[in-house]
Amino acid sequence: GQNIDQPTEMTATEGAIVQINCTYQTSGFNGLFWYQQHAGEAPTFLSYNVLDGLEEKGRFSSFLSRSKGYSYLLLKELQMKDSASYLCAVRVLYGQNFVFGPGTRLSVLP
Amino acid sequence: GAGVSQTPSNKVTEKGKYVELRCDPISGHTALYWYRQSLGQGPEFLIYFQGTGAADDSGLPNDRFFAVRPEGSVSTLKIQRTERGDSAVYLCASSSDPYNEQFFGPGTRLTVL
Image (tube, rainbow over the protein chains, first blue to last red):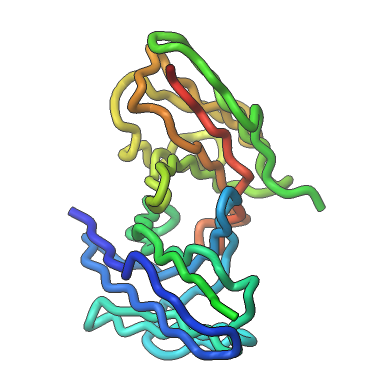
């Protein structure tokens, strides 16, 4: 089977740094994606890792360790608009069958 | 340019009825995905099209669900004999090729009474 775990909820303060973890056990691996989803809206792409290491994109960074089945999303200089759900997704096979985690609901407080 | 669009945005139907949900992907995107998302959960993969053909339909829950993409652009998800458990937001996504990120549409909220 396919399994992706993320914390259900996290809370952080405006201006702070937060790390959202994702662990996965899947039958295959061909890349890990992070998406942001505001309540009632569609997911939007944040980052993509296929090789081990850190990918940085502005205030957002994502890390992958394939041997550990582990990724994290790092958000710096948190803003109120970052309050959203963050979805970790694994592409199990080329072009096919993306498996999404349950999402982590992040609340940014003033 | 225009993003992924889905119609209708909301659909309320009665148990046992037939529904069709439509997805217009970004022009030129060959890969198209259908997902459904229940409240508080991540999207659940249903089916993936590459061009006109269904490359992976392993996520369709049973034979009441069917999807087509006859000309390699617009796709329709069809649900027969709807059940209350089918109530969810149905999301469509497209990408320029399977290695690139997916762009999601706004979804269709299906409610089966």
